Image 1 (cartoon, rainbow, N blue to C red):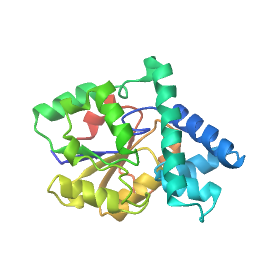
Image 2: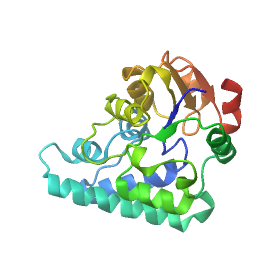
Image 3: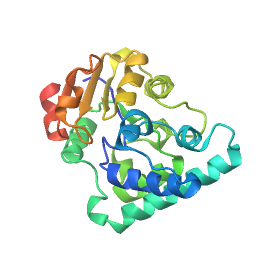
Length: 220
């Protein structure tokens, strides 16, 4: 079976409501701006925190303030997740799939815009170490540009010691899909978690669309 690279937020973890609520509160507090649903779809989802903050606040904001606002947003986000423990679990069908992939020794990792502090949060509350090596996960360490730049998927493939074209990528956002395609990934599976299945119908880079991970096995 081909190596698999998963996006995390909105793909493995259905946290879009909490993530969007945290961004709305943070940006409103910083510059009294409201983020539209279209801005979340076209820009926020898949983007790095620094790019999001500079997009709404302005390009001249200092790196120190960007870091402070970024961490503040994630504190709000993690608090929202903890306040709703019923949502603090992996997406439907994902645990049995990961167990099967582990048994088959399929190489897999995660490529995500999440901060390292959030990855530690996920490892703690979802026990991701059952399936993933923390050292192979590519996240927002400050050196990676936002999707659709392909670097995040190039680094993830390198972490698995494979070529991008030999991987399967699972994504939920248009920017993530384009990032994988720009990296040379040939098989991109879109999961209709934050958008309806029809949303992906005319995106040529998408090989298949699933509504949840119970359907994933049918594609292999």
